[in-house]
Image 1 (tube, rainbow, N blue to C red):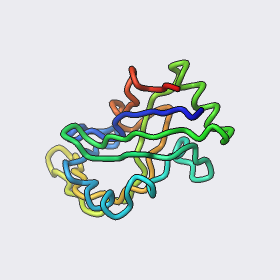
Image 2: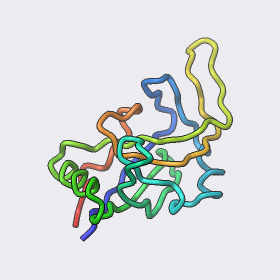
Image 3: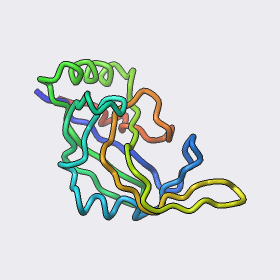
Image 4: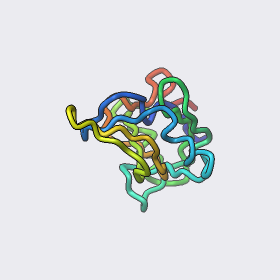
Length: 141
């Protein structure tokens, strides 16, 4: 049976460790063009290690919500499922290309206005520390 997971891969207005903050609507064009099925679920941003599929990805009032499932036939997915179940892992991180951004000259925070999203990874240490799988829905069978 496949493991299902959900959480927020990005939260609007939160400044990440690289001093970037995503604004509402930044993912709109990429999601309309690609849909959840064409945004990859990877392990630690490694394109050689797809581990599942995203079933739903959407912007809501908080940020970029995602729900997906691990593919049990993939060896790395079984490892990830075990780590998730044990609570050893819960980070999410986006892989993207910046289309439009504006940097505040005073704070040096870069506001990401439009993002070309191509993958969401399960990671050990997310660049946005709050980008996590939901604890109560982290993994179920």
